[in-house]
Image (cartoon, rainbow, N blue to C red; front, side, top):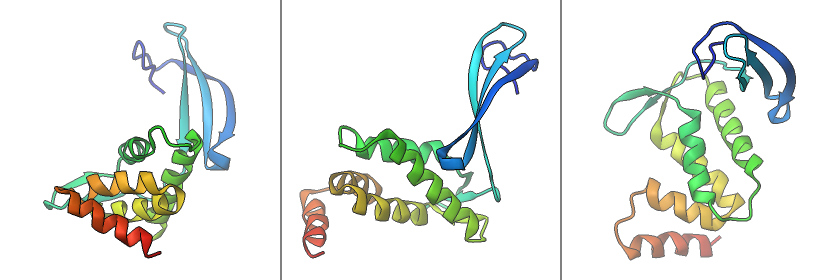
Length: 150
């Protein structure tokens, strides 16, 4: 593993332990070059996922981008930080196990909205407003109306 501080390849694992409810391994490392310590996470990856954007571009799946979007929607909401990681992990596992190496950005957004809808309705509305590109108050009213009908 390359040191993020000095770029040296000479690093050593000092401690390993399970993380994300056994879904990954957290490793504490030390660089033998500069002496800095850093943490890495290893996760099982069933297949490389490619996201097909609405304009047809294909980009690699970026779990951190999805996590950031969900964190923004959940900002200042009474939800523990670990919840975001669990949501992203379960969405990624579901996408990888579906068998297709290409997934549309629409599918990812819909899956995230399903999870947020049951977790926190305010976060759901925030995420949906960006994801669905709301342009006027009527869009919010329609979404809120669909929540009332549940």
